[in-house]
Image 1 (cartoon, rainbow, N blue to C red):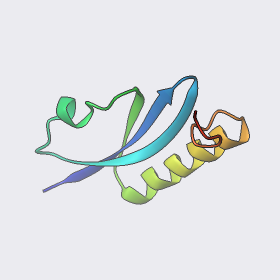
Image 2 (cartoon, rainbow, N blue to C red):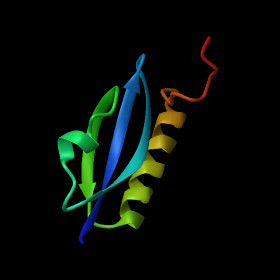
Image 3 (cartoon, helix red, strand yellow):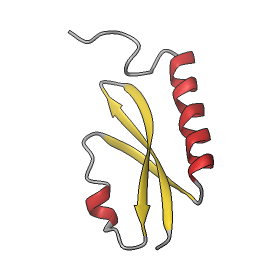
Image 4 (cartoon, helix red, strand yellow):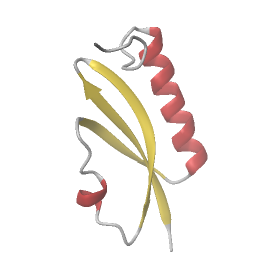
Length: 74
């Protein structure tokens, strides 16, 4: 079975974070992407490349002050 990886961006209260989702050729994408507050999802052919992109996006969010988990929520 062939696997692909998605780099998923989540947006909550103008803050962001990214993570990877593994999908197979047998998965229903609508079901896999039924994620609250999903902002975008990009396909990548390898886990390594997906992890690089996710780390890069999260680093960027932290640098510009829009990373969701930087400050505690009350």
